[in-house]
Image: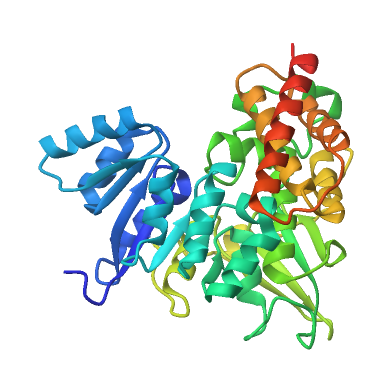
Length: 397
């Protein structure tokens, strides 16, 4: 039935990236089929997706949720088999039938299934930046060892990939590339007086001016930690030192990123802010397919603005550069502390302007050490979460 189609596993199907991926799949039923869909706890949404796309498997975090979904699917006459737990995520990411794996689980939880896909030599569409932030060296070693294909889904990294010379081999040697320019919208507080940031609410932080995203990533955009994580991700994807990765605030979000060359050329990728563009590009690569995205109207845009980021306004960005330069487990510590701090902010237990303080103090508390194994990475992650939790209790109101 699926002869000639590429079968896709979508890790994180109910999130914004997962939904956009399934939209692209639905536009090209002759090219793509769905092998598995996974979600954390959104049973209702996953149920509807299973009815629409009829995957062989669905995966949820908890066994009770999986039993509930299985019962509902059986009653609806849908033959999808429902599994539960981290092991099941790795199973559907590495199954022999799978051609493409959309790695879109937010946070540290997405690391192990993404690694499973790499170990199985899959064509990985990487939207889970934490996989590279936490264990970049280990992840890239697995990709190289198995011959897996790794294509970035973040709009910025996908733009860089499109603007690089053909055959670029993750480094500056003989490529003519001098630096990459990661664009950032600046989020909703680019112009807000610094003294007013203490009063920012979760709803305010999640009201992104250009993109529709989940709540955690929206807060990361507001603090620019999201861009900081992308700096670390770019280091591993493209083999550039921190000095070769520059962040540029571009409030229109039309230029998604740029590559600067030795001869003075700067090549940019432009488009409307719609994640279906990088998703469709990566799914069909090296071909191009319709993504359902409205064409860019430059006359409507009329102007493009650029600013340097202010580290006093966006200390989380500076902390990400610090973690990249320290190396070892520091990026994993950064990520874990940020997840804890943002989670507490969203629950009303921490002021917005104290998120960076929790992260900085956690980085200070954990001595530098190598990240030579997943065990060391996860140990640093665990330790950072414990320390960040204690700091939140001290700083929270």
